[in-house]
Image (cartoon, rainbow over all chains, first blue to last red; front, side):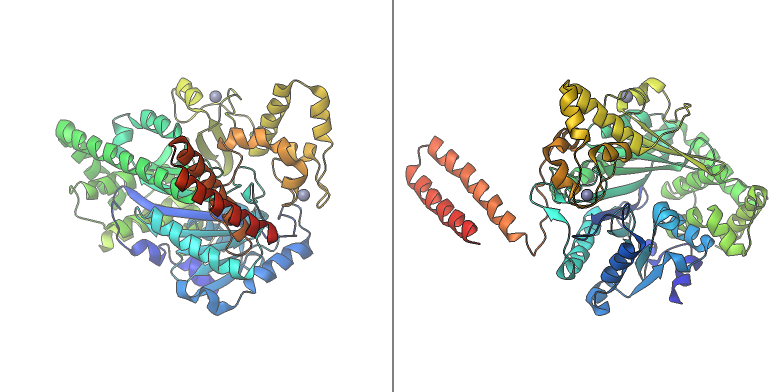
Length: 352
Length: 174
Ligand SMILES: [Zn+2]
Ligand SMILES: [Zn+2]
């Protein structure tokens, strides 16, 4: 079973690459939704019909996708709940596919940059992930994988509505492009709400990433397109691209201003967080998120020498509940998780 | 998707809050989010995209003002998968790709509100997409034709007209 390899490492190989603006944009993701003709959407499909979908989509010749890497198919019914949780924490599958699908499966590329979900809300969802700000590259790759499937599969498509999807919010292009941004300086200078509302006025949506508390974890925000019908894919990508560029600019300016106006306070905060992460015995996910964000900012600003961006990315995934339990090999309650989270962070920071 | 607070404007700020493993989603329009003053609203209460979509469609119906047409819509039924319009408006998901055909233009206000448009202009499947491609090309040429006529470039316009005729003939013979 090659599939368990995907839940052993926290950091997908694709995340190890360095990329433009990767200190502010953590990753770029494109998801394309498609459905097969003449079969009901997963919502209404019988077990038999779902199986048929799975067969047809995994039945395309295995060398057909080879130019995009080596692929492995993982059927969700065949793996245990903890592995599912880890795949979700690594953003390789959606919670919906993990928990609610019938004959759900994912076709994963070896470096985990491509994940093709089967029998999610739609029959087929092609997802491509890139490190840093590479949203155009992500779209181009997803689109060419889409072309490969289309050579063998008759898609549900009509002249007027384009690619037909189960949810009316995805119809047309079926395209959701999103960019994960780390915006600590905009949060600290309290400009974040103003900027995010401006973003929401140009057809984009913003999602804060929250953990087991009520505050944004790690100052991470996901910006994505809201509209899928009536714009071309390139228009959607260009719009997102130009708005993200502007947010990067604002974040950079806010960082400069912070360093000019309150260098001592910021430096103190960053080093304090680094110290606490290096020595704490108990660490809840909320505190870990905030302190890891401080350390990441410290590295970006040159206040700290390390850890590297890939190690920071790795820590973000490794400190999630599912991954902790996977790493240490047993179920844990919240208190235990906080102890092991602290241990894992100490060891990771100490190693480098 | 409409704002869960005012139910009037599209929701553009989305938050997922996880407390003790319980996931709650929040969807606000920009001005309600601002009114809350907080990125993280303290409000609680169940929410699902389904109920929002259904709320949205109720509004579209109410907007029409005609109870009878609303009633007629509710009884629309997809002959392929059996889903009725009223089921669709409750769960906010289509049952199969034919639902789009059977619910027809009844869906336009919904698409208009969610996407600001009702017509796909993006990528086409390589197979089966050639007809649409031809149609799009003809539409483009027709626009250009009007432009030429407007600018009194009749020689160019005549060429375009012939080109359009040829393409339309090819299309009808396919
Ligand atoms: Zn509102
Ligand atoms: Zn149907």
